[in-house]
Image 1 (tube, rainbow, N blue to C red):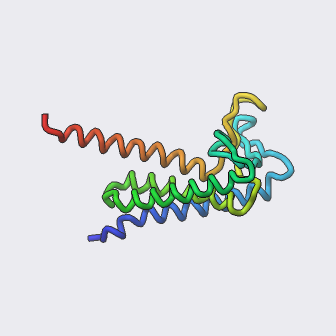
Image 2 (cartoon, rainbow, N blue to C red):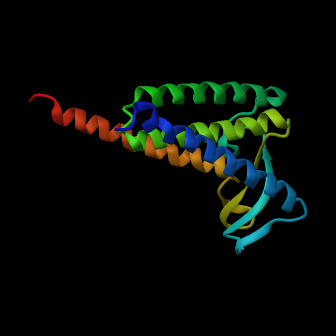
Image 3 (cartoon, rainbow, N blue to C red):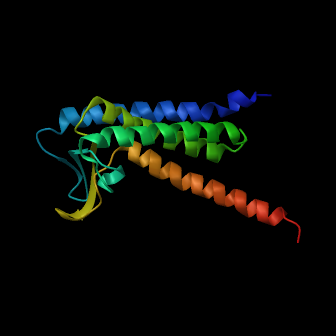
Length: 170
C-alpha cells in the first residue's frame, strides 16, 4: 500500500510540470515573437509577446516598480498556503491535490518572471474575435494552470460541502 507521502506526489509533480511547461513556452515566446505575432487560428488565436507588470491577465492594479515585489510576496504566500492545503487534504482526494498543484505551479511560474525581469510576467497567448476589440487579456501557461486549478479546487470544495451536508443528521 502506498504511503501518504507517495500519494501526495501528484502535487509536487504538477508543480514541477507546470513550472517546466511555463518556463519553456515563455522562453520560446521571447525568442520567436519579438518580430511579429504568429496567427494560430487567424485572428481568433494568436501568439503575441506581451509583458504584464500587474495582476493575472493584466487585470487589477499595478504598484509601479514595487509591483514585482508585492505580487512576488503574494505568489510566495499563495504557494505556501497551497502546499499546506495539500498536506492537510486527504491524499486520496486527487482532484484537490491536482488543483492545488496546478495553482501553486502557476503562481511560482509567474513569480519566476517577476524575479527575473522588471518588465513583468511574459504573456503570449492572445484570444479574441477581432483585432483590438473583443479580446481576452493576453495570458500564459501559468495563468491557465492557476485558472484551471482554481475551477478544480472550487469543484472539490463544493463536492466536499455537498457530501458533508448529505451526511448531517436531519
